[in-house]
Length: 256
Ligand SMILES: NC(=O)c1ccc[n+]([C@@H]2O[C@H](COP(=O)([O-])OP(=O)(O)OC[C@H]3O[C@@H](n4cnc5c(N)ncnc54)[C@H](OP(=O)(O)O)[C@@H]3O)[C@@H](O)[C@H]2O)c1
Image (cartoon, rainbow, N blue to C red; front, side, top):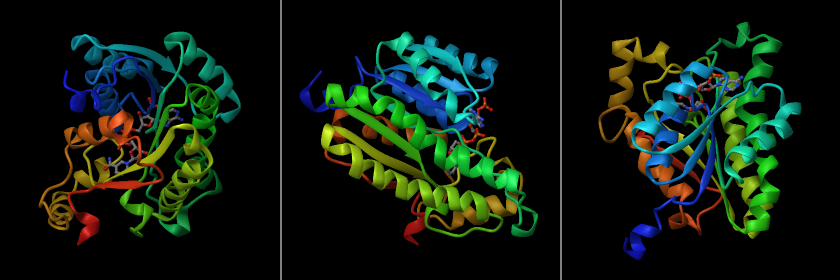
C-alpha cells in the first residue's frame, strides 16, 4: 500500500459504534470494517446487531455485538469494560445512536424532552469520556459525533431534537478543546436527509422528499454510502490535524 493510502487505513484500529443496529451507525460500522478496523457494535436490538455482524463477517471483517441500552449513563463503566474485553482497547468512538420524536412544541412531554437530550447530547459526552484516558495514554484517538442540519437550522417540530443537535455541535468543539492536545481528534458529521428508520416519516411523503432533494445543490437526498468516505477519513490518520469541526454531508443543503 502506498503511503498516501496507508493514511486511510484502519488496520489495527478498534472502534465502538453506537446505533450500529440500523441506519447510519450500521453503515458506518461496515465502512470502518472495510477499512480494516475491528468494530464493537452497540444498540439495544441484539438481532439487528447480529445482522450488522453478519454483513461485516461477509466481507471478512472483524466485529463484536454488545447489546446495551444507552439511556442509563451509570452503566458506561460496564459497557466500556466489555468493549475493551473484546478488542483490547478502543481507538475510535462513533456516537450514532439517536432519536427524533418530531413533536410540536405544545406536545413535548418532560419525558420525551429528557430522552432526546439524554441520548443525543448527554450520552455522546459521557460515553466518549470512558475511553479518553486510554486514548490519551496511547496518544491517539478519534471521537465522531453525529450532528444534523438542525445543528444550525430550525425545522418544524424540532424543538427538542434541534436543542440536542445544536448542543452536540458545541460539545464537539468543547471535546476538541479538552482532549485534542493528546492526539485525540473530535469531530461531527452532519448528515442531510438520509433514508433510515429515523427519517421514515419524512421519506414516506413523496412531495416532501422531492422538496428536500431540490433544496440541495446536488439535487438529491443522501444515500447511506455517501457517508462511507467521510467516516473513514475522520477515523483515519488522514485527518490527524482536523478537530472541533462539523462536516456537513448534505449535498449542499446548507450551502444554499
Ligand atoms: N437519517 C438522517 O437523515 C439523519 C440526519 C441527521 C442526523 N441523523 C442522526 O444520525 C444518527 C443515526 O440515526 P439514523 O438515521 O441512522 O436512525 P435509526 O436507523 O433510527 O438509528 C438509530 C439508532 O439509535 C439506536 N438507539 C436508539 N435508542 C437507543 C438506546 N436507548 N440505546 C442504544 N441505542 C439506541 C438504535 O438502536 P436500537 O433500536 O437497537 O437500540 C438505532 O441503531 C442519529 O443521531 C440521528 O439523529 C440522521
